[in-house]
Image (cartoon, rainbow, N blue to C red; front, side, top):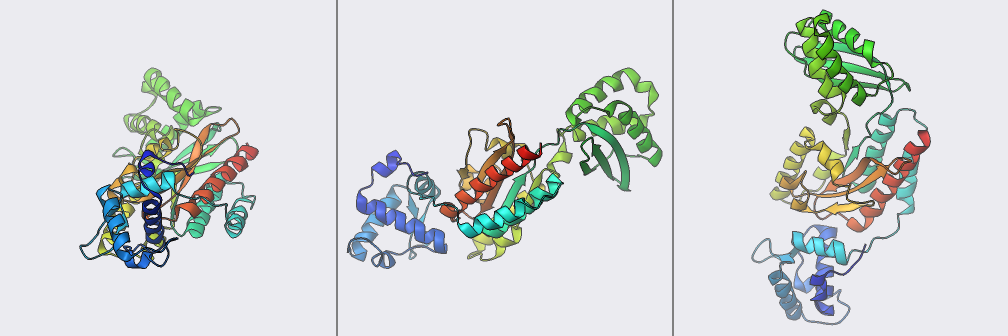
Length: 356
Protein backbone atom coordinates (compact mmCIF):
# COMPACT_ATOMS: atom_id res chain seq x y z
CA UNK A 1 0.00 0.00 0.00
CA UNK A 2 2.80 2.42 0.82
CA UNK A 3 4.45 3.93 -2.18
CA UNK A 4 6.16 7.30 -2.30
CA UNK A 5 4.61 10.05 -4.39
CA UNK A 6 6.48 12.97 -5.98
CA UNK A 7 5.07 15.39 -3.37
CA UNK A 8 6.36 13.22 -0.53
CA UNK A 9 9.79 13.26 -2.14
CA UNK A 10 9.81 17.04 -1.70
CA UNK A 11 9.57 16.66 2.09
CA UNK A 12 12.66 16.22 4.22
CA UNK A 13 12.66 13.67 7.04
CA UNK A 14 11.47 16.15 9.69
CA UNK A 15 8.61 17.51 7.55
CA UNK A 16 7.54 13.99 6.66
CA UNK A 17 7.47 12.97 10.32
CA UNK A 18 5.51 16.06 11.38
CA UNK A 19 3.01 15.48 8.58
CA UNK A 20 2.62 11.79 9.38
CA UNK A 21 2.10 12.43 13.08
CA UNK A 22 -0.46 15.20 12.46
CA UNK A 23 -2.47 12.87 10.21
CA UNK A 24 -2.24 9.92 12.60
CA UNK A 25 -3.38 11.98 15.60
CA UNK A 26 -6.20 13.52 13.56
CA UNK A 27 -7.39 10.11 12.33
CA UNK A 28 -7.37 8.89 15.92
CA UNK A 29 -9.06 11.86 17.59
CA UNK A 30 -10.72 13.95 14.88
CA UNK A 31 -9.32 17.06 16.57
CA UNK A 32 -6.87 19.69 15.24
CA UNK A 33 -3.27 18.96 16.21
CA UNK A 34 -1.12 21.62 17.86
CA UNK A 35 2.65 22.00 17.65
CA UNK A 36 3.17 21.68 21.40
CA UNK A 37 1.51 18.26 21.56
CA UNK A 38 3.86 16.97 18.84
CA UNK A 39 7.03 17.93 20.71
CA UNK A 40 6.41 14.98 23.05
CA UNK A 41 6.18 12.39 20.28
CA UNK A 42 8.84 13.40 17.74
CA UNK A 43 11.76 11.03 17.26
CA UNK A 44 14.20 13.96 17.74
CA UNK A 45 13.95 16.76 20.27
CA UNK A 46 12.68 19.90 18.54
CA UNK A 47 10.93 23.00 19.81
CA UNK A 48 7.29 23.86 19.33
CA UNK A 49 8.39 26.89 17.30
CA UNK A 50 10.29 24.63 14.89
CA UNK A 51 7.27 22.36 14.48
CA UNK A 52 5.03 25.40 13.89
CA UNK A 53 7.32 26.50 11.06
CA UNK A 54 7.17 23.03 9.51
CA UNK A 55 3.37 23.05 9.83
CA UNK A 56 3.22 26.42 8.08
CA UNK A 57 5.27 25.01 5.21
CA UNK A 58 2.96 21.98 4.98
CA UNK A 59 -0.04 24.31 4.98
CA UNK A 60 1.51 26.34 2.18
CA UNK A 61 1.90 23.09 0.20
CA UNK A 62 -1.83 22.40 0.65
CA UNK A 63 -1.32 19.34 2.84
CA UNK A 64 -2.56 20.82 6.14
CA UNK A 65 -5.25 23.34 6.98
CA UNK A 66 -6.46 25.37 9.97
CA UNK A 67 -10.15 25.04 10.85
CA UNK A 68 -9.87 28.14 13.07
CA UNK A 69 -7.27 30.88 13.47
CA UNK A 70 -6.14 29.79 16.92
CA UNK A 71 -6.58 26.04 16.42
CA UNK A 72 -4.04 23.44 15.43
CA UNK A 73 -3.80 21.85 11.99
CA UNK A 74 -5.75 19.09 10.30
CA UNK A 75 -4.92 17.32 7.02
CA UNK A 76 -6.63 18.55 3.88
CA UNK A 77 -8.19 16.16 1.39
CA UNK A 78 -4.98 16.39 -0.65
CA UNK A 79 -3.00 15.65 2.51
CA UNK A 80 -5.10 12.60 3.32
CA UNK A 81 -4.71 11.35 -0.24
CA UNK A 82 -0.92 11.71 -0.04
CA UNK A 83 -0.88 9.95 3.33
CA UNK A 84 -2.98 7.05 2.03
CA UNK A 85 -0.91 6.69 -1.15
CA UNK A 86 2.53 7.15 0.34
CA UNK A 87 2.66 6.74 4.12
CA UNK A 88 -0.22 4.49 5.13
CA UNK A 89 0.92 1.27 6.77
CA UNK A 90 -1.67 -1.47 6.35
CA UNK A 91 -1.38 -4.17 8.97
CA UNK A 92 -2.56 -7.75 8.96
CA UNK A 93 -6.18 -8.49 9.67
CA UNK A 94 -6.82 -8.62 13.41
CA UNK A 95 -7.59 -12.14 14.64
CA UNK A 96 -10.80 -11.12 16.43
CA UNK A 97 -12.03 -9.29 13.34
CA UNK A 98 -11.31 -12.37 11.21
CA UNK A 99 -13.30 -14.60 13.59
CA UNK A 100 -16.32 -12.27 13.53
CA UNK A 101 -16.35 -12.15 9.73
CA UNK A 102 -15.80 -15.90 9.38
CA UNK A 103 -18.67 -16.64 11.76
CA UNK A 104 -20.98 -14.52 9.62
CA UNK A 105 -20.10 -16.26 6.38
CA UNK A 106 -20.03 -19.88 7.55
CA UNK A 107 -23.61 -20.32 8.76
CA UNK A 108 -24.65 -22.29 5.67
CA UNK A 109 -27.64 -20.05 4.86
CA UNK A 110 -29.08 -21.07 1.49
CA UNK A 111 -30.31 -17.57 0.67
CA UNK A 112 -27.61 -15.32 -0.78
CA UNK A 113 -29.51 -12.17 0.14
CA UNK A 114 -29.64 -13.16 3.82
CA UNK A 115 -25.97 -14.09 3.76
CA UNK A 116 -24.92 -10.74 2.30
CA UNK A 117 -27.20 -8.90 4.71
CA UNK A 118 -25.27 -10.52 7.56
CA UNK A 119 -22.01 -9.60 5.83
CA UNK A 120 -23.10 -5.96 5.92
CA UNK A 121 -24.04 -6.21 9.58
CA UNK A 122 -20.69 -7.80 10.43
CA UNK A 123 -18.73 -5.19 8.48
CA UNK A 124 -20.50 -2.30 10.19
CA UNK A 125 -20.04 -3.96 13.58
CA UNK A 126 -16.34 -4.69 13.13
CA UNK A 127 -15.44 -1.31 11.60
CA UNK A 128 -17.95 0.82 13.57
CA UNK A 129 -18.85 2.55 10.31
CA UNK A 130 -21.63 2.14 7.78
CA UNK A 131 -21.26 -0.80 5.42
CA UNK A 132 -22.35 -1.10 1.81
CA UNK A 133 -22.83 -4.45 0.08
CA UNK A 134 -23.75 -4.61 -3.59
CA UNK A 135 -25.35 -8.01 -4.22
CA UNK A 136 -24.92 -9.87 -7.51
CA UNK A 137 -27.64 -10.03 -10.10
CA UNK A 138 -29.44 -13.36 -10.06
CA UNK A 139 -28.76 -15.15 -13.34
CA UNK A 140 -30.79 -18.35 -12.87
CA UNK A 141 -33.73 -18.96 -15.24
CA UNK A 142 -37.18 -17.72 -14.22
CA UNK A 143 -39.77 -20.29 -13.17
CA UNK A 144 -42.73 -18.06 -12.28
CA UNK A 145 -43.75 -14.39 -11.93
CA UNK A 146 -46.67 -12.98 -9.99
CA UNK A 147 -47.94 -9.44 -9.36
CA UNK A 148 -49.50 -8.33 -6.07
CA UNK A 149 -51.20 -4.97 -5.54
CA UNK A 150 -50.11 -3.41 -2.22
CA UNK A 151 -51.70 0.05 -2.32
CA UNK A 152 -52.63 2.69 -4.90
CA UNK A 153 -49.47 3.34 -6.90
CA UNK A 154 -47.54 0.52 -5.18
CA UNK A 155 -47.18 -3.11 -6.24
CA UNK A 156 -45.00 -6.16 -5.69
CA UNK A 157 -43.57 -8.50 -8.28
CA UNK A 158 -42.65 -11.95 -6.96
CA UNK A 159 -39.88 -13.64 -8.96
CA UNK A 160 -39.37 -17.38 -8.48
CA UNK A 161 -36.18 -18.72 -10.07
CA UNK A 162 -35.43 -22.22 -11.26
CA UNK A 163 -32.88 -22.78 -8.47
CA UNK A 164 -35.48 -22.01 -5.79
CA UNK A 165 -34.38 -18.43 -5.17
CA UNK A 166 -37.28 -16.00 -4.59
CA UNK A 167 -37.12 -12.20 -4.88
CA UNK A 168 -39.81 -9.69 -3.96
CA UNK A 169 -39.45 -6.33 -5.71
CA UNK A 170 -41.62 -3.33 -4.96
CA UNK A 171 -42.33 -1.00 -7.90
CA UNK A 172 -44.74 1.70 -9.08
CA UNK A 173 -47.21 0.24 -11.62
CA UNK A 174 -48.95 2.26 -14.35
CA UNK A 175 -52.11 4.05 -13.21
CA UNK A 176 -55.40 2.17 -13.06
CA UNK A 177 -54.13 -1.40 -12.65
CA UNK A 178 -56.69 -3.93 -11.41
CA UNK A 179 -56.31 -7.48 -10.02
CA UNK A 180 -57.62 -8.73 -13.37
CA UNK A 181 -55.04 -6.79 -15.44
CA UNK A 182 -52.25 -7.95 -13.14
CA UNK A 183 -53.27 -11.61 -13.55
CA UNK A 184 -53.47 -11.19 -17.31
CA UNK A 185 -50.03 -9.58 -17.42
CA UNK A 186 -48.53 -12.34 -15.26
CA UNK A 187 -50.08 -15.08 -17.41
CA UNK A 188 -48.69 -13.46 -20.57
CA UNK A 189 -45.19 -13.23 -19.09
CA UNK A 190 -45.18 -16.73 -17.59
CA UNK A 191 -46.10 -18.18 -20.98
CA UNK A 192 -42.77 -16.97 -22.38
CA UNK A 193 -40.60 -16.84 -19.23
CA UNK A 194 -39.69 -20.47 -18.66
CA UNK A 195 -35.99 -21.17 -19.12
CA UNK A 196 -35.08 -17.49 -19.57
CA UNK A 197 -33.00 -15.28 -17.29
CA UNK A 198 -34.35 -11.85 -16.39
CA UNK A 199 -32.25 -10.19 -19.05
CA UNK A 200 -33.37 -12.69 -21.71
CA UNK A 201 -36.95 -12.27 -20.57
CA UNK A 202 -36.78 -8.51 -21.01
CA UNK A 203 -35.63 -9.00 -24.61
CA UNK A 204 -38.30 -11.63 -25.29
CA UNK A 205 -41.08 -9.43 -23.89
CA UNK A 206 -40.26 -6.65 -26.34
CA UNK A 207 -40.56 -9.06 -29.30
CA UNK A 208 -43.73 -10.74 -28.03
CA UNK A 209 -45.46 -7.45 -27.32
CA UNK A 210 -44.75 -6.31 -30.88
CA UNK A 211 -46.29 -9.44 -32.42
CA UNK A 212 -49.09 -10.23 -29.91
CA UNK A 213 -50.38 -6.84 -28.76
CA UNK A 214 -53.96 -7.81 -29.56
CA UNK A 215 -53.87 -10.60 -26.96
CA UNK A 216 -53.59 -8.15 -24.06
CA UNK A 217 -55.96 -5.42 -22.94
CA UNK A 218 -54.44 -1.96 -22.61
CA UNK A 219 -53.90 -2.08 -18.81
CA UNK A 220 -52.14 -5.44 -18.88
CA UNK A 221 -50.02 -4.32 -21.83
CA UNK A 222 -48.93 -1.18 -19.95
CA UNK A 223 -47.92 -3.28 -16.95
CA UNK A 224 -45.91 -5.72 -19.05
CA UNK A 225 -44.14 -2.95 -20.97
CA UNK A 226 -43.35 -0.83 -17.91
CA UNK A 227 -42.24 -3.86 -15.91
CA UNK A 228 -39.64 -5.01 -18.42
CA UNK A 229 -37.18 -2.31 -17.32
CA UNK A 230 -37.62 -3.25 -13.67
CA UNK A 231 -37.22 -6.99 -14.15
CA UNK A 232 -34.11 -6.86 -16.34
CA UNK A 233 -32.38 -4.51 -13.90
CA UNK A 234 -32.25 -1.35 -16.01
CA UNK A 235 -34.91 0.55 -14.10
CA UNK A 236 -35.27 2.02 -10.64
CA UNK A 237 -36.58 -1.20 -9.12
CA UNK A 238 -33.16 -2.82 -8.92
CA UNK A 239 -31.60 0.13 -7.15
CA UNK A 240 -33.85 -0.51 -4.16
CA UNK A 241 -32.90 -4.18 -4.07
CA UNK A 242 -29.21 -4.65 -4.70
CA UNK A 243 -27.51 -2.18 -2.33
CA UNK A 244 -27.58 -3.27 1.32
CA UNK A 245 -26.73 -0.51 3.80
CA UNK A 246 -26.07 -1.35 7.44
CA UNK A 247 -24.75 0.56 10.46
CA UNK A 248 -25.87 4.09 9.67
CA UNK A 249 -26.34 4.69 13.39
CA UNK A 250 -22.59 4.21 13.91
CA UNK A 251 -21.96 7.45 12.05
CA UNK A 252 -23.92 9.35 14.69
CA UNK A 253 -21.94 7.91 17.60
CA UNK A 254 -19.51 10.79 18.00
CA UNK A 255 -20.09 13.79 15.72
CA UNK A 256 -17.69 16.39 17.05
CA UNK A 257 -19.06 19.48 15.27
CA UNK A 258 -22.18 20.86 13.65
CA UNK A 259 -20.37 20.43 10.33
CA UNK A 260 -20.08 16.71 11.08
CA UNK A 261 -23.82 16.48 11.70
CA UNK A 262 -24.57 18.30 8.44
CA UNK A 263 -22.22 15.95 6.59
CA UNK A 264 -23.88 12.89 8.13
CA UNK A 265 -27.37 14.15 7.25
CA UNK A 266 -26.26 14.67 3.65
CA UNK A 267 -24.78 11.16 3.59
CA UNK A 268 -27.99 9.69 5.01
CA UNK A 269 -29.97 11.40 2.26
CA UNK A 270 -27.68 9.84 -0.35
CA UNK A 271 -27.96 6.41 1.23
CA UNK A 272 -31.77 6.65 1.43
CA UNK A 273 -31.95 7.42 -2.27
CA UNK A 274 -29.25 4.83 -3.01
CA UNK A 275 -28.55 6.88 -6.09
CA UNK A 276 -26.16 5.97 -8.90
CA UNK A 277 -25.99 2.37 -7.79
CA UNK A 278 -24.47 1.27 -11.09
CA UNK A 279 -21.60 3.68 -10.48
CA UNK A 280 -20.89 2.03 -7.13
CA UNK A 281 -19.73 -1.09 -8.94
CA UNK A 282 -17.91 0.98 -11.56
CA UNK A 283 -15.75 2.41 -8.78
CA UNK A 284 -14.16 -1.01 -8.37
CA UNK A 285 -13.77 -2.04 -11.99
CA UNK A 286 -10.42 -0.45 -12.78
CA UNK A 287 -8.67 -3.34 -11.06
CA UNK A 288 -8.73 -5.90 -8.31
CA UNK A 289 -8.22 -5.07 -4.68
CA UNK A 290 -9.24 -2.31 -2.31
CA UNK A 291 -9.74 1.26 -3.47
CA UNK A 292 -10.01 4.32 -1.22
CA UNK A 293 -12.04 7.40 -2.19
CA UNK A 294 -11.62 10.47 0.01
CA UNK A 295 -14.09 13.36 0.21
CA UNK A 296 -14.99 14.79 -3.17
CA UNK A 297 -13.07 11.99 -4.95
CA UNK A 298 -16.07 9.85 -4.04
CA UNK A 299 -18.55 10.65 -6.81
CA UNK A 300 -21.45 8.86 -5.13
CA UNK A 301 -21.28 10.69 -1.80
CA UNK A 302 -19.17 13.75 -2.61
CA UNK A 303 -21.62 16.24 -1.10
CA UNK A 304 -21.23 14.67 2.32
CA UNK A 305 -17.42 14.76 2.27
CA UNK A 306 -17.19 11.12 3.33
CA UNK A 307 -14.59 8.46 2.58
CA UNK A 308 -15.33 5.11 0.99
CA UNK A 309 -13.14 1.99 1.23
CA UNK A 310 -14.43 -0.52 -1.31
CA UNK A 311 -13.39 -3.78 -2.95
CA UNK A 312 -15.06 -5.94 -5.62
CA UNK A 313 -15.75 -9.63 -5.22
CA UNK A 314 -15.65 -12.08 -8.12
CA UNK A 315 -17.19 -15.35 -9.23
CA UNK A 316 -15.32 -18.48 -10.26
CA UNK A 317 -14.73 -16.99 -13.72
CA UNK A 318 -12.96 -13.96 -12.18
CA UNK A 319 -15.82 -11.71 -13.24
CA UNK A 320 -16.74 -8.87 -10.88
CA UNK A 321 -20.27 -9.56 -9.66
CA UNK A 322 -20.58 -7.29 -6.60
CA UNK A 323 -18.71 -5.21 -4.06
CA UNK A 324 -18.35 -4.60 -0.34
CA UNK A 325 -17.31 -1.37 1.30
CA UNK A 326 -17.24 0.82 4.39
CA UNK A 327 -18.20 4.48 4.39
CA UNK A 328 -17.59 7.03 7.10
CA UNK A 329 -15.87 10.33 7.91
CA UNK A 330 -12.60 11.14 6.18
CA UNK A 331 -10.78 10.31 9.43
CA UNK A 332 -11.45 6.59 9.02
CA UNK A 333 -8.82 4.24 10.41
CA UNK A 334 -7.69 3.30 6.90
CA UNK A 335 -4.87 1.02 8.02
CA UNK A 336 -7.30 -1.20 9.93
CA UNK A 337 -10.30 -1.03 7.57
CA UNK A 338 -8.45 -1.83 4.32
CA UNK A 339 -7.53 -5.43 5.32
CA UNK A 340 -11.04 -5.98 6.73
CA UNK A 341 -12.71 -4.96 3.46
CA UNK A 342 -10.15 -6.89 1.39
CA UNK A 343 -10.58 -10.10 3.39
CA UNK A 344 -14.38 -9.87 3.37
CA UNK A 345 -14.53 -9.34 -0.39
CA UNK A 346 -12.27 -12.31 -1.08
CA UNK A 347 -14.21 -14.54 1.31
CA UNK A 348 -17.59 -13.59 -0.18
CA UNK A 349 -16.27 -14.31 -3.67
CA UNK A 350 -15.00 -17.75 -2.66
CA UNK A 351 -18.24 -18.71 -0.91
CA UNK A 352 -20.47 -17.63 -3.81
CA UNK A 353 -18.20 -19.38 -6.30
CA UNK A 354 -18.35 -22.63 -4.27
CA UNK A 355 -22.16 -22.42 -4.14
CA UNK A 356 -22.40 -22.10 -7.89
